[in-house]
Length: 378
Image (cartoon, rainbow, N blue to C red):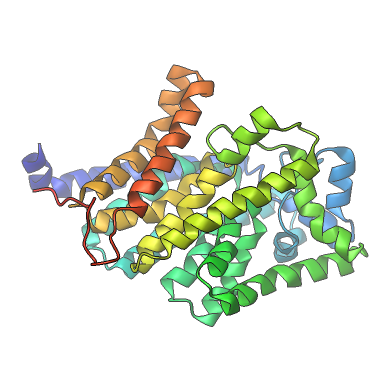
């Protein structure tokens, strides 16, 4: 089988390219119709001087499609250009930007890792056809936008400009938080303050423009997020919510969020002991998927680990990474649908992800720079 694949890799690649192009065209066509999660209407409300957080907290939900506005102030400030267009045109422009991200992210990573042209093309095809990317384009989600800015400090070696723009990832609390927490865990306090600057600028512009109480407004996005009660089955925060917390206990939820941050902080300290910068990055981006609720589109954050594992695919741990991520990207939804038993399937999936993170954490022995789990396969 391996001999067959090597001999016919060009033909296989041409077939994959054609299939991927057709898949992408199909996904774009769906995005032109849907894009319901693109946060256009909350931005319109903000630039009309309306505090959408107060409005949605009072109403208990958003009032346009699935745009519930539970993102940071900065996102709605950045979306000013889209508010000049009607919904139908705005969503097509945002879809076009997401398509650029879907090509740009693999290109940046593969170039940074100096992967071969063949592996780079293969990874690009995986990224544009995997379910998380297709779902992001279909729903008009912000996940690609957030991931792009999360990667910048790791791609550009913590340059001040890349650190500043990494702060744009703060628009999505459930993912972007890990960049700021990692700066603290790695004792890069200067970078933390640089990265938090865009967030603070967004907050200042928001409360001034809407004439809101600054202190109250600072916590409103978090309050809206917690009151929404967004949970999934394959993360620690959701499991705590489902089995231990009252749906209306916002204060108790906030306490548990702090507790989860502390656990995540400890893990980030362990990750930062690894002296391979991009391997660290891939594990750092892995963390939010374990600790906080995410829909399938956010699992694009597994892609950096996939790229790193492709670079070093002779080692057992990296083969496990590749098999798991490919499974998740293409077969997870099918298997979940066939089993139709989330109560068991999703916690098992979470357990496997935790084990996978632990295995990766312990796959590198920093004391003598030797792999002890990364058994090289002959």
